[in-house]
Image (cartoon, one colour):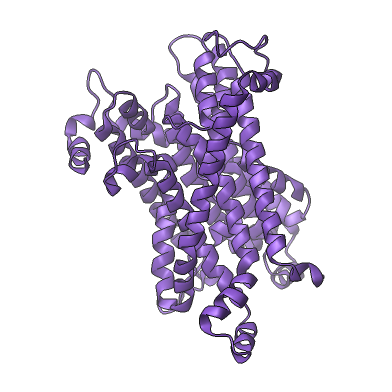
Length: 253
Length: 232
């Protein structure tokens, strides 16, 4: 079976579009589009909100509320929204499936980013914050120049955990008649073409691992060395994912 | 269609009637969903305990163990479901594929939690226990593990609640659990929306997640009576 999967994955005709089938590259782009749109919207919502809640210590219940969303079964919400929304879009567009998918993905990505941003800002040492105010910084300056950079490692771990959940759930979106790498899994299952199904799984797993690697690299260069204490190679740097589970409890979907 | 859609109304609020109409079928799905959510976490904890202990006892094993389990946790659930059978030499769509994949996730999540929980035991306490004559094994089970319970319980809550959602995903590739209610509802919704099974599935999933979460919280309270004796 493993040999069949390798054959399927290395067959170049599976990578490009043919008259009958959509190729891996196209589905990969579709997958990344779902994830990219949802991540952008979730960042626009969760990042300012988390910074605000962490800085002002107001509206903390919003974070608890967002965390409660995680108990919702993603597939169920996806199907429910599809059934509600898709009849309003007739014809040959897939907008009726795209909108519910993006709503579910945003709902999924907001809680980890929000709660990590909030926790990051709130956990800044009071002494540091007082020193910043004492130097004459205004509230927004303290937030953007002190609290935000210091909480970046935690914010990044929230974004990484959100991105992984998005990649996982965008796969499930192929359960609807939409593109994305999940197409190969569900089509392979329906056609009993198991090499295709398992090959799709391998592609999704590879995408998740690669994306996390890319984000980890970005994090390494964006987060100040004064915060990670990454001055010499001898000092152990705590893995950001270690913070991830405490703060974000990843609900895989 | 006629058998499944025999409720008089297709209003979303009619999920209770739908449940009564199909109670034996729905209870069977709920039951298998519960099993699939709980058993892998229990097995995962049993595997994670020695691994977490190793990562704590021999510090050099901590980074590799945590990296490998972190990597496993990165793999999306549905990808892991379909990759488990070929990797373990099982039949495609073997009934064990989902429990095995869920166990892998639970281990991946809980090893870190166990190691961190054991690290949260104060060094003074360990030394006091040693001075009182506890042997290492006895000390682990009677002193270190009980003190680590709150941290482990926090990890178990995450594992159980996320499992409920992942099991529903397994329903989309044909396993019989609450996820099937979504498939049924989706199929019954052409041409007109038919909400009851979908809403019922969401309600039962959320209820199950809440009940299992409370069960872990209760178990944590039962196992750590000393935390109630001293107000902190």
